[in-house]
Amino acid sequence: MFNQIVLLCRPGFEKECAGEIMEQANQQSFPAYIQTNESSAYVSLVSSSELNTHDLITKINFQQLIFTRQWFACDKNPLSLPETNRIPDILDAIKGFADTFADVELDYPDTNEGKSLSKFCKQFRPHLVSALKKNCLLSAHARWCLHLFFTDSLHVTIGIAPIDNSSADNMGIMRLKMPGKAPSRSTLKMEEAIHWFLSPQQQTTLIKNGMTVVDLGAAPGGWTWQFVKRDCLVTAIDNGPMDDELMKTGMVEHLRTDAFTYAPKKQVDWLVCDMAERPLHVSRLIARWLSNRQCTHAIFNLKLPMKKRLATVHECIDLLHQNLTEANIKHTIQAKHLYHDREEITVCITTEK
Image (cartoon, rainbow, N blue to C red; front, side, top):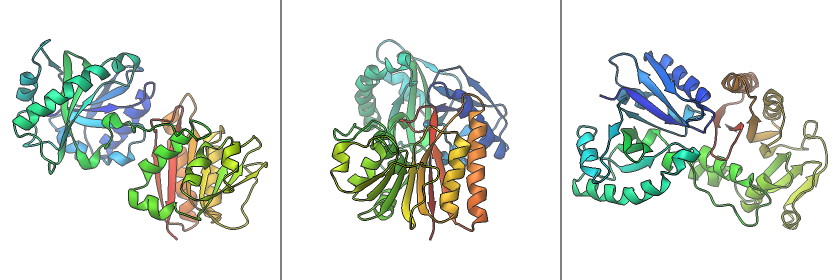
């Protein structure tokens, strides 16, 4: 029986991760409690009844979890392993989990201490995969991914997650390389956002040659660069300087003006915004652009306060929903604490014309 769900998150955001999974569990009338430690980079939701978390993890939509990077259902008690020949104990422990697994993921906390397990996991994984194949436990058509969560090399929590309701990236971390020509590392936030929020088909239809973008707080151009790379025309709004090489492309117009008062002459396809402003202030700005049909879609960051971060996120998203609904705009709002985010979340709003 699986009696807990382990959720991985960014260190320091355990409270927010715990708060939203408890909200989801309560909506499912699933009695549970939280176990976690500050800056541990993971949270445990533990069943306080005979109900099985195996079912709960299929009922909660993973895409709606903002602060959770990855998750899996498992037993509360970790497995102690011998110093050598760990695989037989693991194979014995997973009997009855599922007939077959689509893949196996080796996880560890995203902390300085946890990262010391990276080398061990990389070396151990091929041996484990070989054993799983030998025992006919891997199948491309299986529904579940096997998860091994190590807190050290001799203790592992073993569980499963549905492949269609969990992150496709190991530990929920999208591995991106810093583009050599990009003006700033913030470009990775936009690249991750595009891949996380938009399906491959949406990426080709919603961001394509000739589309127009307004980038508020653009300098030096990290977010602008991602859209220029995709052949879009960008109006960059910022009093600071833009990257010289980016400006030489001829696809960027730089306006040194106030981002909160600027308005485009006609509707643009995308509004993007990464400004160090109060989250409600930014949310009202984005809501105004969308409600006035000055843009069709938007991606923006909300810089979170030190306290009441989850409550602030709810307040901002509720404001956006309310404003767009009142404007009779059909919309989809997604939010995520991306790997390349820090004290912020990224929000994507797409609308139907």
